[in-house]
Image (cartoon, rainbow, N blue to C red; front, side):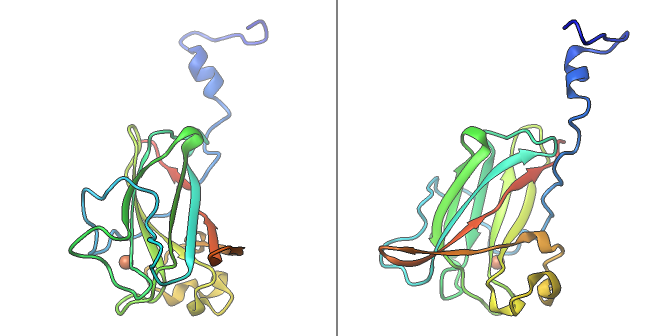
Length: 192
Ligand SMILES: [Fe+2]
């Protein structure tokens, strides 16, 4: 450590931490909504082979605001099916995921349908990790027809969307089973 001189009361950990602060903005909050259910199954494959709707693959990483990946973070996700219906009796399109190495998570689903009472297609998230503030948020899709091709301008058409950051770009790819939508959604938690 010949290049690092520590003043009185400064630990090596603090010294190395300095300069790494706030490299990522926390993911904006959004409402929990009325359809959350506890104890969702641990699975990443929400779409069953015969399910109607556009295939949707979501992947991302969980970080804290200093840019540290949070391996072991828990992500609970829930959404309507292609017809805009939530499963209130069971656990279709509901899952609990654990972020792996590098804070990575992914799940396979279908594009959620529109439903009365909400303007935009969305997937709900509740993300928790030790030492971090729990986050409820929602993922939206730039391809949602509500946005008329311009989510930066039109995201306020859904009064629950408080930040255009939650509206994610969608890449449509060809698969043997037909077209599929790929979306990346990074989560940044604040330390508690
Ligand atoms: Fe919802």
